[in-house]
Length: 228
Image (tube, rainbow, N blue to C red; front, side, top):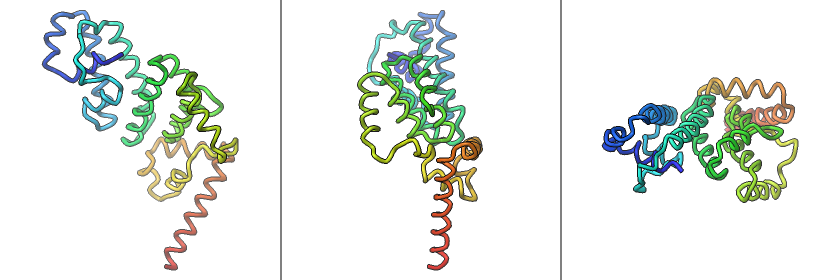
C-alpha cells in the first residue's frame, strides 16, 4: 500500500520534481517525512531501513502519480500509531522490536489500522499492557492470537498446543525478572519500564511469585560463584 511513499522518501532527487507537480501535497509530504525521521531517531536505523521494516518498499519502481493525498494521510496515521507505541519505551532495542512487531501485525491485519488499534487494547491482558512491561515478544504473540483470519488461527493453534501456558502463567519472563533484580536494573530495562514492572508486581500474584523464584535462583547462583 505504501510502496510509493517508500520510493519517494528514499530518493531525495525525486522530491523537487514531484512537489512541483503536486504542491497541494507538500504539507502531507512534510508530515510523513517528519514521521520517518522521528522513527529513525527512535530506532537508530537508517531512513531506508525504517521504511523497509515499515513495509514501505523502496526498491520497486512505482508510478508516483498514484501517491494520492489519501494514501499519504493513511501512511502518516500508520507511522504515528507506531510512534505512539515507541514513545512508551526507553531502550533502542525495545523500540526496534516494537516497530518490527507492529509492522508485522499491520500487514497481517490487511493494513487495517483501526483493527490493529483495537487489537492492541483487547484481551484480558492486552498487547499494550505487555508492551508497558517491555515484554515485546509476548505483546505481539497476544496481538496475533486476537486477530481474525489465517494469521490469528495459526497463532491461536500454536498457543493452544503449548501445555505450559495457563491462567497462572506470569506476564513477565524469568529473564526480565532477573534483570529487574540486578543492581543496574534501570540501565538494563529503562527507567519507565522498570517502574511499570515494579508497579505490576504489586498487583499481580503470578508475577510476584515468579519474581521470588527468580530472586531465589539469582541468590543461589551468586552463592555458588562465591563457593567456586
